[in-house]
Image (cartoon, rainbow, N blue to C red; front, side, top):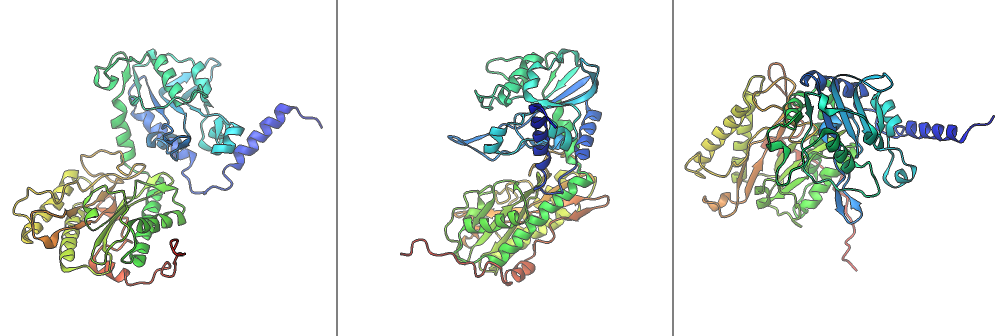
Length: 484
């Protein structure tokens, strides 16, 4: 039997796309989930409108090496697509193509390319997007230039304004840079030197502000499927805190402690970090977003603050534990730690639907202020030892989208009070270098909350008990590279 060359090409393409998922995890969110998310977006769009979303840019690390690609969370939330150089259109109302086909969404993606895939990994292409992500209208991104659409007919064209930080690949005429340029021409985007569209009066029908509130409302309330992803990320992150409590020893480096956490993440198949890992021993813990993690030897009497979160299938945890390196809190460390813990528990008491976000912070601040005064560390509420808020949404971003007025059922938030007393602070020297943050993740339920990160010890008693247990890493000793 004879077959044409085209037949073999189509057959090989189909086999290649279908084979892509054979060695992948089986618990990704379904294409039905993403389709439902797009419908929820459509329900919130204003009359006679279209929403336009662009994939994240590929970021260059140095020379010919790029950073590991991470999809724009809004784009991923609506599509499940994890590749660059893509564009999504979601229409409020049905559209009709030239051939009479009716559609209300369309996705343009990077095409299959056998040579490029050999170097940079598999691509879904338009056929894979249809099969695995459930789009009926999906095309290679090169088709967007020829896609006939009159944006002027819509009352609103909603999109996020551009930051002009996308590189152009001169070898690809359909990369993200070109997709944006083509959209600007089609939508009559006003290019003006020294200004941005976002701060000018909304001319014609272009709307660069309306999507924020819509996406906040959608992403701030987690679905049942999303909660499974968040729970998995939280459980993994708790497991890493437990293993470090058992494994940590004086003279380890901050980088080694970070490595144990992140090894546990990978052991449980977490694809990424939710954010750069924060591992600060002693006075380094007083730097809120300390990510150098470079101290070569942590000392016997220090606390170590460890703020890390695994990202599992796009969803991030955010957990902080502060522990004594030698396994036993000093009297001063214990007093500060238990004050922070008390502040957290005061906020937990009012964590329920209807509570204003600000009340959670107020509960922690009042507790910390009162405690610091009683310890003689401050004389007034005007101090810098608790310099941050205590709560934020988590999800596809570690500081996730969501409304910040009042708590609602199925929000997932953190409660994370802290006290940081840098060296040379205006208080007794015995407090210097003590930094404590306790951060946990909570699901707001119908009548209260579910403490998602409860498996990571958080009381003085439980932490000290955990730190006495043996670790699988106790006998893991590497050779001395400097020994001749």
